[in-house]
Image: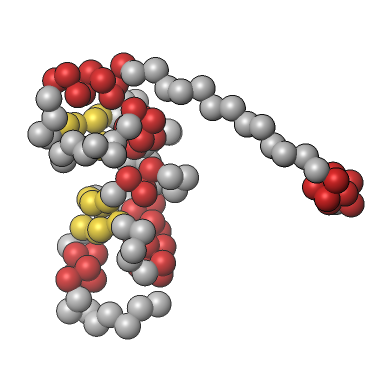
Length: 132
């Protein structure tokens, strides 16, 4: 719950089917945006890359409005793979604005780094695992 009035610009946007999604917005608002989007009430959500991090909000189209030095091939894939809703769409779309052809190719075709996990196992961790 927020203390926002119905005249707040973000609340007015929700009423028009448009939402913003950013990690610095109140959690209650972000939760509402997620719920309304999944219920197909919001046709447009404007977001930072935070939306690609484990939040279940698949969509028809993902739009990249401009390039950023922080955009990596992994981030690109995390965000663009939201396009195409399983069980609803046979295809998803990714749209680029203000990107060079070279940069798009770099994002799309770059290999991802191999992720390796090496958990540290010490006596305390081993006891915790055995107790559970």
